Length: 468
Image 1 (cartoon, rainbow, N blue to C red):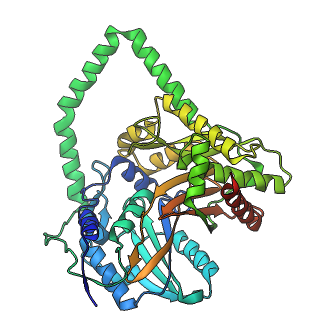
Image 2: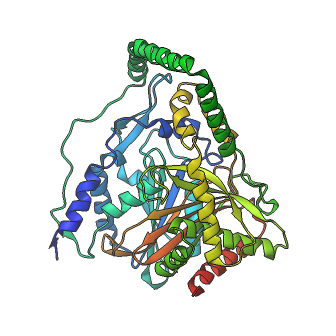
Image 3: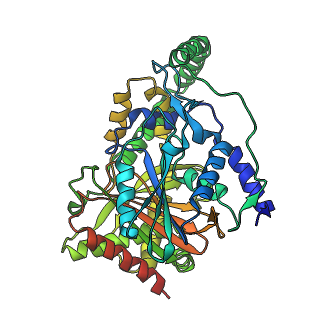
């Protein structure tokens, strides 16, 4: 029986209709797009969504078709100019075929879902088509199912992917009538040659203003040369600290090829994890880092390897020290391994992350991206590879706070498996209702005992639940 759309659903779907409407890739998106060397230097994320039942296939296809019409970006592809005088542009795919992007398969169990998901993630995208692929896996125990979505960073980063999925999902199991529809608009067409020519014209037109700005900056520097030199030196020192590995790489997490991915997933009640974070004076982000460090501590002990700290990639707020802003940058910290108590470990992580707020060059890559995008693609790729890589990346993402459904199937878990740009593992913690869903992508070539690492991470998550 059809039901009328709720006000909450209508508001979320309205937000989805206006999601990501820019016509061009941002400088950072363009840099990652042009520099990608999949899978070693990948910009692809994968989401595994556990469902309580297998949704009706026809309804699921219809819902996906509606979503691609509501969110126009899902039917668009990236068009590159023939020369890097302009950013890549989004254009409608005139040959869009939903059947190419969405399919279903049967599996024996959830382990097979994760194995298949990793293989899907390792396959490169057809860059002439929209940058997403979805597979519904049926046949799980208890009539359950899982939906695997692979998506490119140019289309959405992990945070944007979780936000988009949360917006498109329904708040009820029954079919919803009278869903909002996208406005009819003329197709967006982009020609690679015209993009390059228009970009060159814009550059020529901007030359006088650019020259005037450069002269003004030189004039300011000439009037206060000592201050200008001191500022440049401080910025350079900050860059050096940020691009240099904060701790030696662990011998137990290498060598890394980046060509063999293994997906692991874990669950934990959210409130105990938040409680540990509060007791340690930190945030949920700090707790996620502490969980990964605790798992690595156990793994190194299991391997009889004495390692005191490992480099960890984290997300740092650019707005304020309590990490409540919406602007973030990536940075490295030294993650301590010997700390046994989860609360003390959270406090140590909090101290490391707070120290990063004094760094002047947190946005150095964003600042350099426009210039790098004007150079041959291999230059940008080399610049990305030149930065120090951590042993682990850790990211925390807010998911749906309440129950969500996909074509009548309830979402029981949502796990984000990020790429491995040189790291041994990438961990993403997503909050889904009152559950913390941890997805870990592991470079299988870098970890000698995958089963042991999985057990160590599970034991550390259990330890967080036991903290009093």
